[in-house]
Image 1 (cartoon, one colour):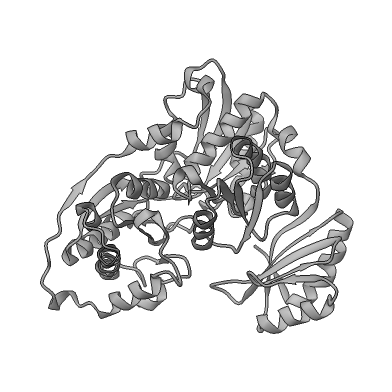
Image 2 (cartoon, helix red, strand yellow):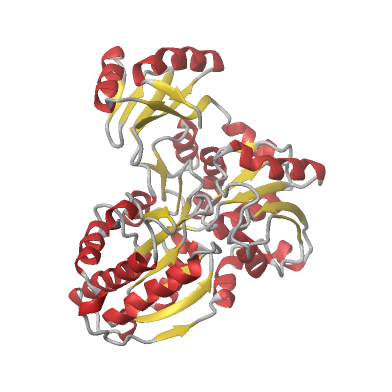
Length: 465
């Protein structure tokens, strides 16, 4: 059962089978063992390096799973700080603010209500994922037997950090929005997730923010729609409300509120790569020459926009574990993925949905122009979006793709990337399913259609999202 809950980037599964309170206790014990040992081996003698923070989302199973997780940590001897119901980015903030050895958010992010899981971070809010400690936690969890050990009696306390979190985020807000001298009409769909708590607590006092709320109720643990903003159908309420209420912008958050999709004033979704292309100019005006990290599925526009704004484009493979590590290594000022995760140096190189919200509403308020108009210069190419193909032999399919285009430039940072000049693509293997994921871009819609028709049969059977 334990092996079924560990994924590439975190721990996630259906509740109560295979994920349950027994496994949560094992994972809590193992997480404390790994993170406290790392802090000790690094020579830290600060008492806070025996502390771990734990937050949880609004799912029905989260309270009991979080309680068992914290008990496992205490039984190892860790001192636990319970943050209560918070967005995932609050856990990253708390690790930094308190200077502790790490933390865990109990969440299944965008998955349906019957899922849950754990996102684990070490000191500095650095992620624990595949290749960076998750395998060790799995090993340690499998070895521990609760009935045969003597609990070490770690302490526990509850802390409310919302005021400190709000103060950190609102300093990036346009002063006019804060005072009410500027106003902005905004629609937010919280997807019955943690944005329903985070948005009022962090942004509720902004006098110029005229907020229309959708699906803010998050006490029941049920969702009006799946809390996944990447699925087009889940954006319908936001799109309709933006147009009907004549709002300047809409946001649809995922379940743990660490990412979102943005809707322009016409009700059209803004691709996260195009949103990054627009926002980089703001960061690079403040710090010319700084690095900006983007995932390799992104439009070529991103690289062009970074260069045009005087920045240094840095391409990275998909996944928050890799993005955060590269952000830190390059001291990048900002970064983004197609999935809606945006990373900021001023949030410790972690992804933060509240920080995205703050940046977008500030940029809009200061510009005084419609979002669609601001994004238009970056709509330079035709993009397929991510398309899945089912295949029995992914390696053979990638080999066929490469052989079909011997003159194209190739790269293998994450899957196979081809650049044929007039079109370019990336094909990656799924971490969890027998699928290949294609992202294709071309100079014209006609060329995009031709290449999709040609490449599809090479990759397998197309699968509906």
